[in-house]
Image (cartoon, rainbow, N blue to C red; front, side, top):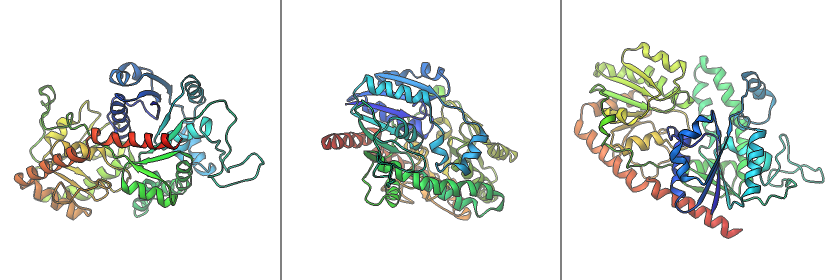
Amino acid sequence: MRILFLTPQLPYPPHQGTTIRNYNLIANLAPRHDIHLLSFVHSQDEVARATPLHQHCRHIETVLVPRRSPWKRFLSLFLSPLPDMALRLPSAEFTTKLRACLERERFDVVQIEGLEMAYPWMLEVGSWKLEVRSWKLDDGTRHPASNLQRPISNIQYPISIFDDHNAEYVLQQRAFETDIRQPRRWVAALYSLIQWKKLSRYEATICRLANQVVAVSEADKAALQRLVPGLEVTVVPNGVDTEFYNDQIPMTKSQLVIGHWSLVFTGKMDFRPNVDAALWFCREVLPLIQRKVPEVHFYIVGQSPHRRVLRLVEDPAVTVTGYVDDVRPYIAGASVYVVPLRIGGGTRLKLLEAMAMGKAIVSTSLGCEGFEGLVSSRELAIADTPQEFARRVIELLDDAARRERLGQAARRFVEERYEWRHIVPKLDQVYETRMSRG
């Protein structure tokens, strides 16, 4: 099949959730399909450095991310019926290039990667014409979102697959419910409340418009079906490359030495759920661990640390690394890998990476949400209160044999269930099913 991927960032290097998923889907589909890519980028230099991506794609086109001033973003919060995610990437240049792609090639499938990409596709050249405040047919009467107006065009539109990386309205709902408990976070809570309500309507609309919806977990599937009862959703989970993530770190990467009593958390550190996780762990959990294990040290590893995260280094027991070329030496060096997430949706690729590397893990219930078959105390430890989380970490720090058992079980779990080579055939089946329906 000819498949056109639309991505909000160039899927290389695969260093964060969206790019990891998109790169591995493309790389594993490429041997059987003709892959084309249209992506936003922050600079054209990114394309030159993405050699592996060129090996998997027949054709790559890019558009610079449009600039949006903080003032416009603030105004849209109160004046636009659309959520912030829908307003990040509308671009006339993107529309022009997308139409040129569709006129040049007859694609079987267009795969829309994430909710940010839905608006450029659906509004400008999708199968339906989206109007901001309402939906209209040719006679001017207003109708619900399931009855929309086709644009006049000579383009034969391919099947559209909407890959919803998170049930985004759930993420904002959880952020609101977390922040509203703290008076100093009430402004952030107001933002999340507004976005939650807007996203509920918008995400439901996009799900109705796409020919097929893909979710990353059964939990996200259920969340989308609460928005749109009866919606057909196929689960294509996130995965991990177990050959890359293993306990055999190349010699050139293994020079990093971190302390024996080391705790590690990885992720993009300006992403709100990760910021909240790092702050909660440092303020509520780490002091409890330090009472029993004074030598403990917490490493926060990931690019673009928020200023609130940077301030955590005032505690000498905390290191904030910022961007690193390779997270594997940090994960490998961890005594315990922690996932203290309280906000979020979808599934956490960071958890799969740590499991693939055979690490003992302590996670909140939300941090390991969406992974079918995962059992507490067999593949990892689960804790949701500061006291319980600290107790689980201390127990593992005191028991090397148990750390080894959990790590081995975690590695087996991802090898059997979450290798990309097991996952991508599910997406192939989605294509075949949709194509057979016409």
